[in-house]
Length: 157
View 1: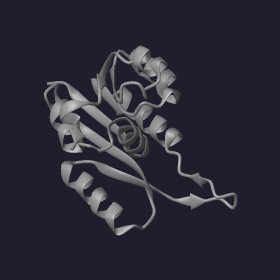
View 2: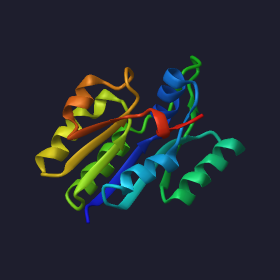
View 3: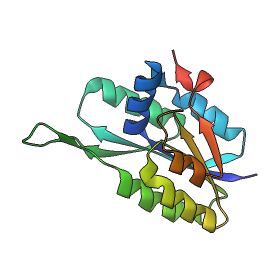
């Protein structure tokens, strides 16, 4: 059975699904979809911690599904902008996992990860990307072994 590691960019999924579909992403459906292709041996969800009770409830739902939730504090800059970027953390974790699993699944439409998926594939590891059509970087789609559009059953309506 194929050994799969899953990496979910929670902020990217939240904003792209909301923008394109006006609803939320269905993490349980993601889990079910991936397990049709093998066994999930590692799963991480990367999020920003604002200390909000609703967010904490959502993070517990992710844990109950089987994700290890990794949190960074929400940082509000003096100019009003916010900081909370997990790109380097996701990259490090994927690089760590890529040589011990058969497939890496990245749930994000962020084009910054295109070189990462190219590297994963150079190890002979499958690199699957889940992203919202129209909001997923084409460079990421091209870099993936397989691209899965986030639509239909992957949405919570």
